[in-house]
Length: 292
Image (cartoon, rainbow, N blue to C red; front, side, top):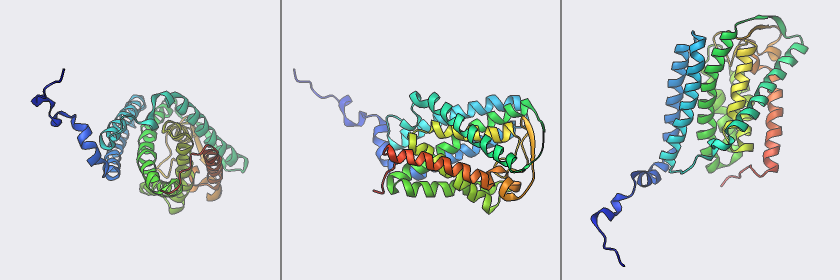
């Protein structure tokens, strides 16, 4: 039996998101970049506020990380009109975080071991367990938001338009440039961050097509650096109150100087080796995308 159309069947009853999404998608890069960047800055301010209270910094940092994931999912589905967000698929979460944390923590431990072998350690003393927990909390939010911005928005969208190689270079340079605002930042330090952290974390995303893996790497690298060894993180004003107080001595090429171990040639070599291994795997599995 044929059904007669009623006013309620008018096309205007189509859900609003499906109408808006295609229009917003044309401007998805600036909209998403600005929105995620603003959230990252706001979260950083909250982290800074609770940092003096480690037992508060831990739950707050974890809460911000969870909120960051939810905000990213909501923004990308609303702006891009996507039904799913595969780079943050729940099925990949625990395995990606676990493997990333093991690799990131292991790589920075290797950096410190090599600095020790070449005589870069001056003194090592006990620090604070609670301080280490507070750093772990704050770094949780940092890892989520920086990966969401630089790999989830910048790299992912740029790769669609210009290919993997261009996206990797541009996202790495911008990732390093953001560290120029840190207290002890240097041109060499920011370049080192671009070549190490930026390239390695982008390679981690390419090989898995998931943000969970680079989030785990980023988190563990920073926690082992500041929360365990107590060394300066990315040119910060002062060394954090970690589990240990590690004082380094020797040439800047070995220790990274005031910027911290991330600016050392040791860190550069370790991270570039890891990046090359990840990118070679990405090539073998067909994850490198050419320029359209």
